[in-house]
Image (cartoon, rainbow, N blue to C red; front, top):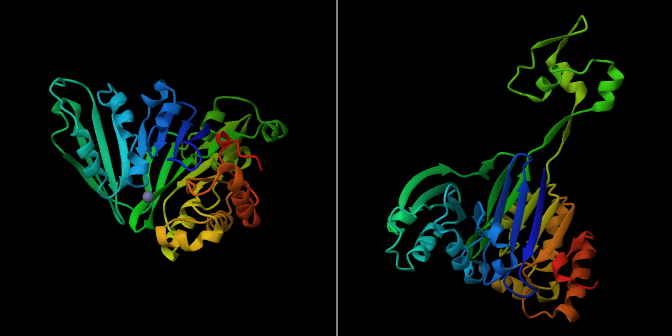
Length: 337
Ligand SMILES: [Zn+2]
């Protein structure tokens, strides 16, 4: 099991995040936002296999690259495309899908599911390539209080933050893995055998009795002694929001104890008034969020174009590190510290 990520886009330009989740049995590709030209950095095979596209919001710098993605996936066979975002995402995506003439798609494969994540509910719609995307099919409405997606091996949670308009922050968490503690097993003198499979299979009741070399053991006790739980990795993506009480509280709840927090930091803390005016974050605010959330590391991205990579970025990093030492820029940006 593993999670890998890549920040797309150059410093001071549109940015996004590509995530590969290897669940042990399947491989998933997730894209977070889709700014202009960003997918040119990604292999075609990866673009054509994106399972989920998560929008933080639909300001143009987060969606301007959508056509590139759409062109490569509009008639995808076998697997639908899933799109997520704040309220009105389905409406905006529908406009994009209808922005072309579709007279040669009769019987073409391709199904798109778009889910609007609102304060307390999620509403899904689907669009079919074979219909030229004309119809907006209602697929259902469910309550929203954090979790948005559960796939084999990982989950995605979300929180609604404030950017004058709502933006959605996301957390991808791998499931914890359970393994047999080999040294404890060896020391216990218990024999190897098929019974070990039952330890990890929670469809088997913990009250089941296992007989081993003439002694009866309760499965519950064997599990307690022999299983080790390794926590899954967690990665969070937060962009375009202001550091007000509600956003702060929701963001903290989402990213608590997160391994890697990818968070916008549009402004230096010296430009806090600009951050306030434009509903964005400063270095100090982003770093204190990561600190308070007990994150393992923080990656700053989505920096204002007012700052120069050579002249200003080392200073921005220093500001953040004053509060949260484990702060970095994306590796791909090659910032000299
Ligand atoms: Zn924005």
